[in-house]
Amino acid sequence: EVQLQASGGGLVQAGGSLRLSCAASGFTFDDYAIGWFRQAPGKEREGVSCISSSHGSTYYADSVKGRFTISSDNAKNTVYLQMNSLKPEDTAVYYCAAPHPGYTGSCRSYEYDYWGQGTQVTVSS
View 1 (cartoon, one colour):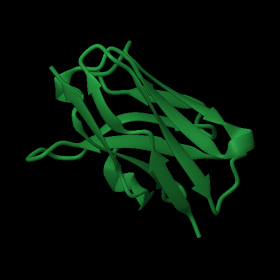
View 2: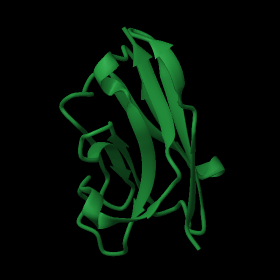
View 3: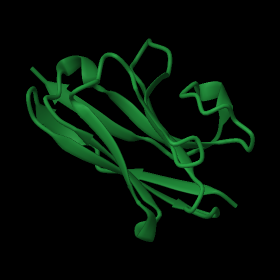
């Protein structure tokens, strides 16, 4: 059974940094794909950053390019999202997710079947 545990959220001032962690179990990390998504109140869930070892790809939303970095530690079955230069508009619940088999390599939420519980990120101005 695929399980994902997101952590690392919190309250930070604008310009600050946070590192989110997504601990995964139930699948091999030799061939993995994990996405980070966020949802702010009243807004649709959006793909923030996704990484796929099988597709050899990483994706960043335009709004976070140059500020966020996705990485993985295969030994720990964990994917990280380093978030720097945070802005108030980054405030949201952040979720990590794993896609269904055969997904296209996108960072579109409909391709992701397994979701962690979410971690709140709040950036104050």
